[in-house]
Amino acid sequence: MDKENTWAQLPKCTCSHCQQNPNSPIAGQHRSINRLVALADERSRRLLVGFLAQQHGRGGISLMSRITGLDRNTIARGWRELQSEQPLAHDRIRRRGGGRKRVEITVPGS
Image 1 (tube, rainbow, N blue to C red):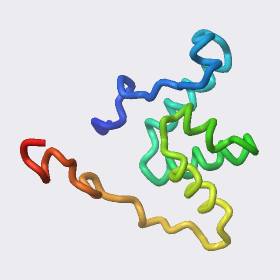
Image 2 (cartoon, one colour; image 1 turned 45 degrees about the vertical axis):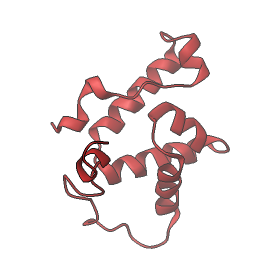
Image 3 (cartoon, rainbow, N blue to C red; image 1 turned 90 degrees about the vertical axis):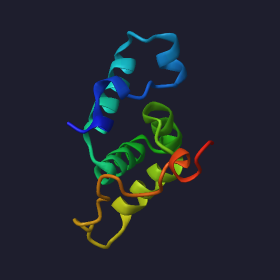
Image 4 (cartoon, rainbow, N blue to C red; image 1 turned 180 degrees about the horizontal axis):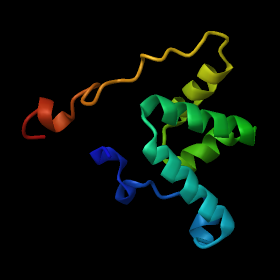
């Protein structure tokens, strides 16, 4: 399992229901969503959370953002990809180490 996908790094749901009732069935569902999201790669994570936001309807993007900790723009992109009539590309998953380098690496002393 990748270092980034460990159970210890699961995001904590910040919705008011989970904050007030951490042992409730709804909080359990939110923990299950976060477990699935943690196991998915970047693209699958975006599509999965976009799908869940669609299922929730109005306010779904905000809710999924609070539950998973993903950015609203990422979730909206997943939603758009699912609604697109173009087939989903299979080779567009970023390789490990891809993307922008951390500030600490590019600007020493920051």
